[in-house]
Length: 232
Image 1: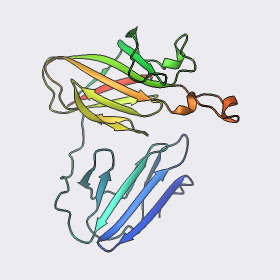
Image 2: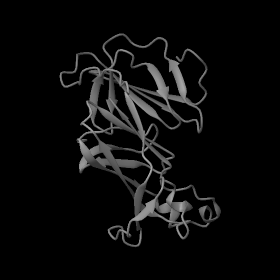
Image 3: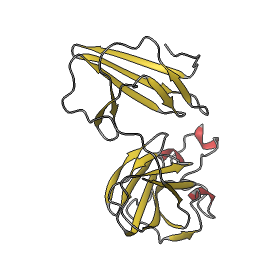
């Protein structure tokens, strides 16, 4: 039970012979849900990340901080999980770098392997805000360059305005995928000197194959509007 009323919080509870599984999601379109659940079951709790397929120890697993459409999976097994990752130390950023100039490429549904020539942008904007791309559907790639004096101890990337899901690579290293907020990625593979960060987004076929009803619905934008790297 949440400690404050949360009309957009949805909870699913599954009981298994070896433990309990809880799924929480914020179905609200705008506001974050920040609450602590009362009456949580006793036992060691873990958080499962389905994007990275990892399980992490989490004593505060039932303290929720869910962005709109965000979710959380909590496990309470009867026995400790031997393959669980240790509790992560809080990420404290020493330096924040906003990524501005970039290049963007597109590949339409007509041929998803045929990438366009790179277009230079002073800052990331929605591709659908560019002339001639108002109804674009397909794949989008933003290429950023990041120059560092030294390799950081840890780093993460925060994206804003993402539509509709994002995958990130750093110098060719896969840093994961997110299909809902928060669009926050732990960055691996950063090195001293120049680094290439690539963010790829994909639209749905709904932008290219509208039925007789959705053909008249307004189209959401496609792309992203901001990228910030936090260094430790």
